[in-house]
Structures are given as C-alpha cells and as structure tokens.
Length: 284
Length: 289
Image (cartoon, rainbow over all chains, first blue to last red):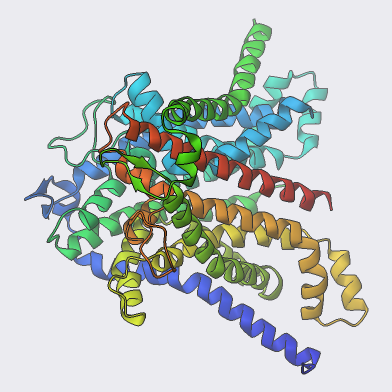
C-alpha cells in the first residue's frame, strides 16, 4: 500500500467527508424543491377551503386539514400536561433507584416502538375494547402514547438545564418543593419545554400509520363535528390519492403534499428559531 | 391547606412519572394476549419458519419468513447507505466546519427528521422508483432497493444527530494531547476522537436501524408489497410493518388473519425492544467514559 503524506491524506479525507455531508443534505432539499415546484400550481384559496369533488380529483382538501388539526390538537392537550408532569417527576423527585431506572428504560423503549404497532394497540384498546370507535379521540389517544416519551425527554432536558443554585436559593427561603418547582424551575424551563413541544407537534401532524387504523377515513362528506367523529386526515389523504385513486391529476397530489410539508416544516422552523433565540437570551 | 394541595400535586406527578411503565406493559401485554391465541391455534414454529404468507386463501397459511426477509433486506440495504453517510456527515459537522456553519447544518438535519414519511414515500414513488427501473432495466421499480434508498434518508438524521453528540462529548484534552504530539487534525479525529466516541456511534447506528425497521408508510408505497422470499435487492418485497398496515383494513375483526397481524406486531415489538435496549446500553457507556 502506498503511504500517503499525512497532509494530503487529511485533505482527501475532508473532501470525502464534505461529499458525504452533501449526500445527506442535498436529497432532502431536493425533495422539498420537487414538491414546491410541482405543487404550487394547485394551491389556491379554493383548494384550502373547499370540500373534495368528483372522487377527490377536484375541489379542495379542507376536511383533511381540519381533521388533522383536530386529531393533533386533542393529542397535544392530553400529552403536554402528562408529559411535563412525568418530566418533573424524573428530574426533580425521582431518586436514583430501581424504579427510576425502570421508568427510564420504559421511556427509551416506548420511543422505539414502531408507529404501526401503536396503531395496532390503539385499534385494540381504544377503538375495540373501550368502544370509542374509529374516531378523533381514539386517534388522539394513540398519538398521545406515541408522543409521550418524546415530550418527557425534551422537557426533562429543559428542566435539567435550570441551574441547581436556583432551586437551592428558593428552598433556603423556606419555600416548599412544589412551590419552588412551580415558581422557579418551571418558568425558567418553559421556553425549552415549548420548543420541544412544537417540534413534536410537527412530527405527529405528519404521522400516518397510527391514525390509519384508529381515526382516519377515506372520505367523509362533512367537516368534523365532535371528537367521536371519524375524520379525513392530511397524511392519510395524501396516501390515498397518491396510491389508490387512478387518474389523479398530479398537481393535486403534489399540492396536498405541499400543504402537509409546509405545516410540518413551518412548525419545525418556528421551534428551531425560538430555541436559538432563547439560548442567546439565557441569563446563566 | 397549601400542604394538602402540594401533596396532591406530588401524587399526580408521581402517577404521570410511572405512566410510561404502565404503557409499555400494556402494549406488550395486549400484543401478547392477541398473539398468544394465534400461536396456540396456528403454532409458533409454523408461524416463524413458514415460507408462505397466504392469509386469505383456504386453508390460510401464515408463514412470516418472507416478511422477516423483506424487513431485513430493506433494513440492511438502508444501513449500507445511511451508516457511512451518516457517520461521515457527523464528523464533518462536529469537527471540521466552523461554528456558524455547524449550527445551520444541524438545523437542516433536524428539519430532515421532521419530513413526514408519507411525503418521502410519495417523492420516492415519483422519482426514485422510475429511475431504479430504468438504470437496472427491471420490470418494475417497486423493489427493496428503492425502499432502502428512501429509508436511508429517514435513518440519516437519527444517525447524524446522535453520532454528532457522541463526537462532541469527547473530552477536549484527548484531542489536545494528540495534537501536541504532532498528529494532524485528521489523524487525531480518526485515531482518538472516533475511538472515544465509538459507543455513542454504535448507539446511533442501532437507533437508526430501529427507525428503519419500524418505518411503515414509505415502505408500503415503494417496495412493491410482494410477500415472497426475495432473491436479490432488485426484487419487490413486503415488510412486516407494511403487512400490518395494508391488511388490517380487510381482516375480519377477531378472526385468524386479524390475530396473525397482532402476532407480527408482537415480533416487531420484541425486535425493536432489543435493538433499543442495546442502544441504551451503549449510550450509557458513552456517558461513563
């Protein structure tokens, strides 16, 4: 083997690493570009605010947008308080014992369960056993279990970054433990908790497999009325029109993908920018 | 009054804290219960080693070997692409580019992770599938290879983010020591930094694998969904996840077919449990070193 000059080998390696990083990032930018380029012609006020017509091939996607919004907001309302409480327990109360180790292991494994298995579980427990039927609430509960580990992990990180001295100062004034958490720790951790929450909302808005079996419907001729309604959902709608319906006009499919992508990416960008802003402003 | 309120809150917090355990046990128990009935009626061995998946024929055959091979083939293919690219990108982002560029690249990687799998599947269907068909001159582009390519994009963000954390948490003294001995920056990265970060990188690969095995929608759209034991990466395949998602709608509630899908769910749950467990052990090692 030829022995390369270390300087030259460094240059070659860096070139290779740079190529690898471009291979990671460029395809994703291309995906975004392709969807915007082909989908933007379908976007109009009518597309966003009317019902689908002629077997989804014309008209708009309003019920799908509203369906996704209702499932996701229900899921968030359940996940946020419970997830934050769980994070508070782990970061502020839990001692380093067997129970805590088991909780942490449970969170790790909950985070790794495939989304379609959550769908199966939701179907078995919420739809069938609790007789909620295929509905917004069954879908929301399924997404809740799926998002719980993510919310716990990010909230815990935010709580953990609040300096220990803040707690000591408050406790030394005779303030109780809960009051310290409520008035000192939580307000300081809030930006971190919220950015984590927005990122996870973005993620579940695009999930298909968990709601496929628990909430989503092929076509519903009216808008969602109550949480026990079966609804259309944007990701599932995209799945249907891109694979199940023949002679679908291409720009409508791309337009639907664009709307979904924009909802998800906008929320993610907001969260990322907010996080950078709060990190810069942090006083400790 | 305030004291009782405090205690009440603390009880609620404790209950939320142990809820994760409850859910893991519930999910496992539920899959086990449904799967157990199926195993009793059909036989575990016939299920795991059966080569034919014909759930709707008479008599039905529930052999998941083709589905397991499908999942493994797509996952291995995705890893061949995602692991080298992911690790090299992580080195590039954490060690080579200046801080400003690093923050931008990291945000981009985070955005990548947010793109829904259904969107990735759809773009794969309209771009990669025809390209694969044309280049390799195949009867169809809906192959394991197309699936692997698209899934690699979904594993890369996971691998990059976690490897980058591991590389950055290598103590600065290690690097300074090597540089002071006259090593070039690249020699330092290759022989010192990478070696110290190895447990974290292994964990990153495991979590990437876990993401790929569990991926459903994109796989269902672009791998062709043929439940045969594949001969090469150019064959159409059907994964375990896609089988559940595609067939649950038509399976009769409570019937054999229905229960068999829960049994597949159980297999998936056990596999991802172990992969994540191993990843967690490696992550712990990384923190201790």
